[in-house]
Image (cartoon, rainbow, N blue to C red):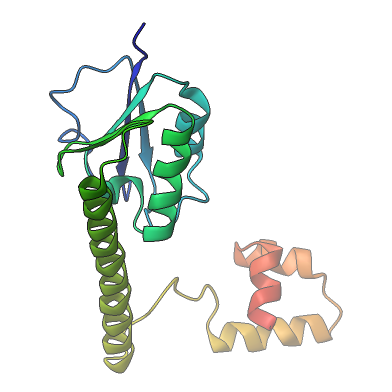
Length: 185
């Protein structure tokens, strides 16, 4: 008896399209996630997929970087699945890992491709840091814009000093109490 063919599809953000992944693969069940690949923690759909598969099943993944961008996590995931009798197939790299079939060349390819995925992730972070630094240098707003300017904060402090209720002040300004407290620092 052969197991189920299970697909795991991941894109990094909600505006990315997952349609190109596993298009020609016949699957019994598919798990689709829109989350960063920086680590496997905090990816509830991946956790559901891992809890769903049983011995004899095969997890199909478009490419190694869709499963993990950290070499240690990638190896751990594949090792754990294979030790439970679950096969893992990466279609883009044409690699399949099966229980009891330890192919040293495939293991090397997994490690190399995983290392490249991890390197790519670190390059993304470096480019992001450089972009933020350049934007700051140009005086651009980084992150969420402030809800209250300095004059408004000064006016709020005066109102509080006169004994006005902070909840009422926040309501007058159309902001939450937490935003008011944060602005007062």
